[in-house]
Structures are given as C-alpha cells and as structure tokens.
Length: 225
Image (cartoon, rainbow, N blue to C red; front, side, top):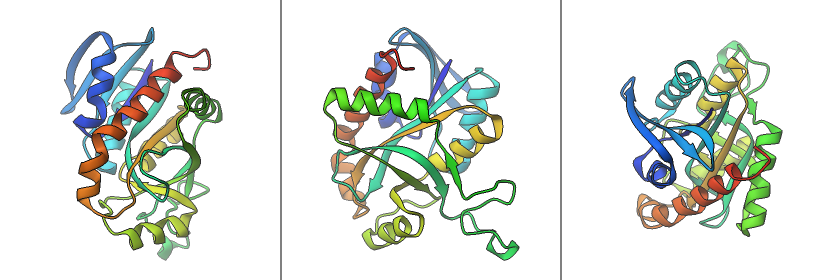
C-alpha cells in the first residue's frame, strides 16, 4: 500500500479522479480515498495544512492503512521557475528550535541530524518518470515550517540557511514520522510561486498541480515502484 499525502483539495482532486475502484472514508477528520492508481493499491489522504496535520495523516497512513511507502506531494514556494518539480533528497523543519539545548536549528534531540533523508530508490523512480515526461525538475532539500511564506527575502533566507530549494508547510513532519516508523518516503513538490505573494500562488496553483499529478501517476505506472 502506497500512501499519498497532500494538504489541500486542489492538491488531491486530480489524483482522486484518476483512482479506480475508490472509496472515501473519514479517519481522524481526514478524507482518505482508497483505490488503485496504475494498478497499485493507494490511499490518498488530504491531511489539511501544516506540520501537525501532516504528521497526523502520516500516522494514520501507516497505522490504519498499513502503508509501507509514503509520498508527500503538493505545491511549494521555491527558488526555481514556476512549474519546476522538486524531488527532495532530504527535508528539514526550519522552525524547530532546540538550540537552547545545544542542537542545531531544525534538529530534534531524538535524532542525529536536522535533516530527514528521503528513500533513494523511491526518489530515483520519481526522477526517472519526470525525465521521461520531459518535466523540468531539481533534486534538492526542502524546508518546512508552520508559516505560509509570501515574502521572497524570507524564502531566500530559509533556503540559504538550510541549503534548500523550496519551502512549504508539511514535508518535514511527514519525513519525521516516516523516519521514526522505519517507512520509506519520497517528497514531490511543484513550484507554484517564488515566495512572492499569495496572488502568485492562486494564479499558478491549478496548472502546477497537474504537472506533479501527471508525474506521480507516471511514476506509479513504471516498474520502478
């Protein structure tokens, strides 16, 4: 079972439309759609926005649905052109702060690093699907925090601090739960804006959602997953 987790309706609606033999249930207040994509058993979970919501969705995916792979997808602010897809090699929670206890910014003392590393095989499968589809993509770190970043300078500062290519609000917590549970994960995010404004996000979001949805479905249809 592959769990696909995204925060918003706009990020899951095309995936749900493409799924076969699907059934939707409400688990812990979250819409969970079980079905098949490219003949693979999936559960598509609309988590809601933010790290707590995404962590809860990941726990539900693993403990209730028995997911043995997790993919977090959706939109992000990024330093790359709008429409570029980011495949994360690692994730960090940029607003997690235990520096008073001697940890680097972003690091939880339960872990050895601020970063949570995506599964190499899953990430490579996504990258190959993007290459075959001719979609521009970047392999990069992604930084998560509980703030909608609509300030380009703030986005650049966060990216510089953590060597990241983009910022959003969920993947770092998905990565933490998966790492703790020993479940492989991958992160696929499409750049909807450059951290400039909410208006840019709203203007480009529908088009960009189709880009990452098509790429994800193509990857599920390959022999690599």
